[in-house]
Length: 379
Image 1 (cartoon, rainbow, N blue to C red):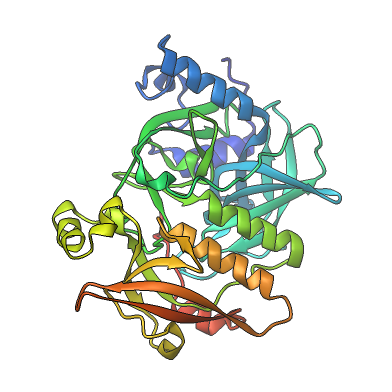
Image 2 (image 1 turned 90 degrees about the horizontal axis):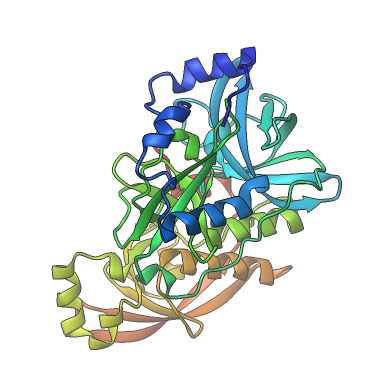
């Protein structure tokens, strides 16, 4: 694909941000990359079909501050609301340097949205959540940009490794960039316990872009990792967008439990648990790593090391699934101050099983939220 002459902002941003990244804007390098689906295998052809179906919905985003490039990444059109088109991306786009929980406000940063047809339109930050590391960029309504549906994955989807595709759009050439890899059943080393992992060899351009499988299911959006690619799951993204559409804010459940999916344990540790609880051999459950000491009485006696097997009868396979249930709960509460969920708990420490009553309420305190908020590494 031929490249257009770079505009001053393209050149400034590319040199400042991507100058030291191999292959970020080098189309010749893209053609030589074995993860780029340029072959004639059936898998390569299938990958192209998946990507081309998404093409018009994938955009490149640039966030200059005071005329200087802050960050650039990829975004996806997810809704048309009133007079606006919403583009979902990573909150890294507007995160302030050297901070964990601070981002530029809409009036402090301009967003340039670079489209597939070479157009550049202006956007602004409409929603930003640093806990889940997602943001919504709003632009004037663009009906020629189709929206992508964010549907929940099958409940046990995360148990199986499968081939996937990471998608981005290059800011300079406006070309689609694609990386192939596989989902892996490992625990992320980052602070966010909901994250999934894949082996797609991405660079920073892919941040905020989609990861999809060959059945065209959206797995989530990309966050950069050195050894593996981290994915914010679609269950989380969908609910954050839904909350913002309905309430113009994100209703955060005030249950500070951190954990990880049972099936992400090392095999030796998983064997020990399954010998005690044979019903766990299929990978069901979320292992509790940490509980906030601020309001531990609201957790129904749950302790670190316990396994949450189900919530209100729904069997748990991932932390993202647990978080999705909690996010749905605070929406259903409406005018209620709190509600109670019933969790089935198995405790390996003494081989017991019990029912825990979880008190759920909406977290309206910024200070409380930050005390147990995810912290994303600086890039």
